[in-house]
Length: 439
Image (cartoon, rainbow, N blue to C red; front, side):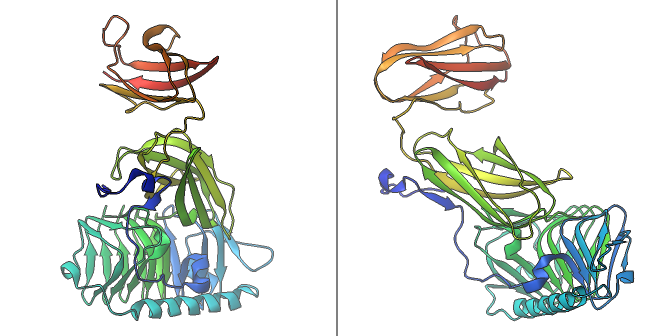
């Protein structure tokens, strides 16, 4: 929950838009050409079961024969292969130039990135919880362990879109079955780096986030979900695993204006993303409601830019937004939340806000605004179009109005569970909103 000091004047808050976290000091690890791959390995890449990989796959110095279980189909150019399990392309060291040269450079960049991550000093936290970091929330920073690190429950990384987490692990990283590594506060997967000297194992049906830079092997077991990259200096083994990487988000921010709250996001790359889901809440930690669906613009190795304006907002109110990246398989990766404070009342136009809450089981809060004085009629209708309650019938001055409705009809009886509509008439114009009552 975000709390403003009592002495902070409301005028200073207008147009404020902020991420629900502080900034971190660590700079991201530069992946170089290795960042072009979802999976990159030196000695082998194998798949069993129905694996789904978003993005490109590469192996070097090993040949294509060391990529197994993907049913590779060699392109006529000889520079890459395709696979029903991979939305991008598959590259190997024995393919036609420039593939071998490009892969050599990518593997070198992978090793450089590993060395860079391992060499960061000084750590912000050392030997935290002796390596057992289940049921923990971690702020941005540099973490170091000389022991085995295990995650057998929930791990939350909480910070903003520019915050960075680097985990230096001198032994193995073991993520238990059904364990979940999730993000909060606007944190982004591409700013999370797991530098592991020993083997990394993602247990069955676990959900993991970030780039794995492993000096040995990465093993992704049955049903595991990795939102990030697996970059291993030996082999990567997959068993009916999912690496979505539909879109690598590089920006998610917002700005308040007279027309509402504008959301902006940009991707560093896109492959199999299908659409964007936008949800809004009055709280940072839950009760999000879907407000919009935006179609993705199609795959792009260099990314794309998007925007959406939420005009159905109350004045001087804090809203939290999260962004869902839905891929073609129906899986959704959530980003955010970020927070915004709406501007003051826009009395230059007639407005009817969405009720709070919606669906509602008790009192309903309705807000509307008028640009100038006039006759106002605000009524509730059932799904068949019959008027069931008149809330306002009066001459009103220009300004903002708030009212509470108890969910009753014109006789004072509670209305049954159903879909209803509330309609505002003013100066020959009408605005209508939909609501749901649950009893």
